Length: 282
Picture 1 (cartoon, rainbow, N blue to C red):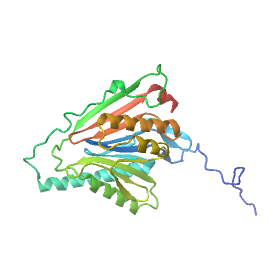
Picture 2: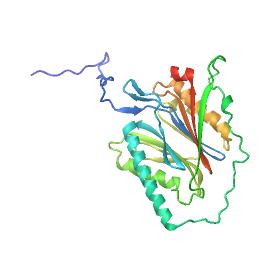
Picture 3: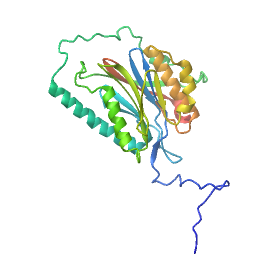
Picture 4: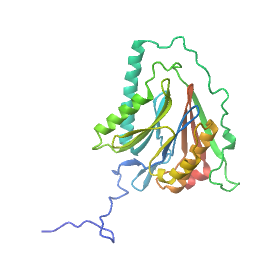
């Protein structure tokens, strides 16, 4: 009887499957991070997805809009996390329809602009966290701003409810799902919130910051040292941008460009930060 031999390395361990096989699942080997600051919450991530040792996409979108006031960062198997996001979007739409049937809750509410005195981000003078050479090309930043359609947030689902629905979905299917999420958002009940949902279905509410993915091990100590409560928008932006760039510098599975989403009481801002040198190096 002929016995089929499995290829092994010099230590006798079986070799991994062929990294160039097109059927290798696409994975978000990634860096995702969320930080709470004084007037809102920010999420950020890199944009590299890989299939084995191949980079399948350098500019993917790992931050997804669940509702106008809630966004999520994805890690793990790309197909799994995309399907989870799709299901949670349908859940949010159902909740909005139910809330509309009940009518408006605060018709006479007066909205105050707490961000009137908030210092905006100077996009032309973003700090260089690596201290790279002065002759390097500057960062190129694009910015988009969206105001909430439901300005009273009467119909929008609560961030906590969406996070726990995500937890139930991952826990009920943890035998085959392989993905994790960081959810951030702003609602009228608990203001800015941040939740980390692991692939086994466990959920943790974070009151400072949450970080996950293969690049997270390189920035944990940096975050612990630099984070402070009630940061301004500008301070939070520079910290979260520096964290993702440090992770991209050290982690082979993180790279591409940096996407940042800022959620506040009145609006959502989306930033895309590219640096030509970093883009080609990482």
